[in-house]
Structure formats: structure tokens, C-alpha cells
Length: 152
Image (cartoon, rainbow, N blue to C red; front, side, top):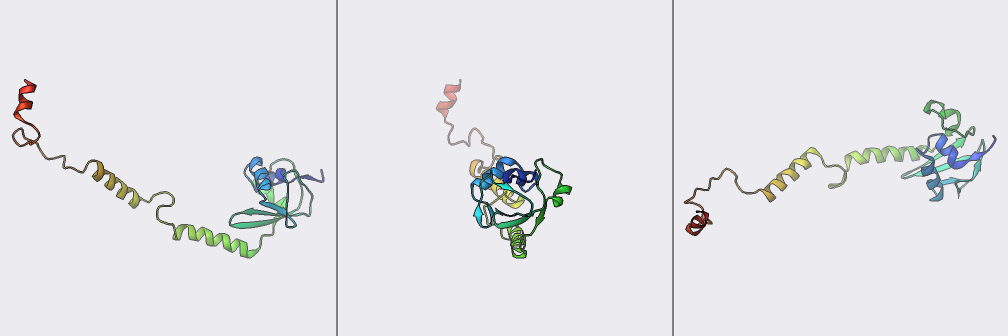
């Protein structure tokens, strides 16, 4: 077993969660070797360098050994070497930090404050009248004596 399909290797080394996702990434041109897009059926061997684009970062891996079956996370370093450039890793850190600091209003899950404001808004919109007001029979302008006669 000197060669293995690239989609199978990407899945087995836990770069992608499922083999289908690895196959789709190859088909969409997110996996390259030597700057060229590869098909999922491309055979790889030890020593090959693979670039995987997972926006916003392009990871680069060197194949140390090939394998057919998925391995545990602790064994992955035996099969690949992460040679991603430092600037790509810094870009990933910046994106992680930026996601928390500069969340655009209306994007993502609402905060507790947003939830309270929405509840207050909907309560006023649908139930904006005062429920504690007591309509006395003589005070109700909508209830007439004709209505009283009809009820008898």
C-alpha cells in the first residue's frame, strides 16, 4: 500500500469530518497539489505536499505515510506534517478574534439584551393595552342598551 486516494487520506487523517465532505472539497477545487486542483481519485504517496483551502485559511500538509482507515486523533501526527505558513495561522487567529469583537448587528444568535428588547417590542405590538383597566357596564362606550336587550 504505497498509494491511496486523496479523498480517503484526507478523511482518514481527520482533515475532513466525512469522506463525502473531502470528496466535495476536491471537486470544488479546494484541494491542490503543486498549485493544481486534484480530483478525489488522485493517488498520493509519502512525500507529497497537499494544500487544503478552508476559508479564510489555506492549510498545507506533507504526507508522511499513507493509510486507508481512519485513525485516532493522537495518531494523526504519524501520517502528516502541518507545514502551514505562519501568516495563514495568524490570519486564522485574527478571524477568530474578529468574530467576537466585531459581530455585526443582526448577525448570529441574539444576545440576552436583544432577546429582551424583542420580547418587549412584541408585547407592546400585540398586547399594547392596559389589561388592568376594568370596563364597567356604564363606562363601556361600545356596549349599548340595544345590546343589553339582545342578551335578555
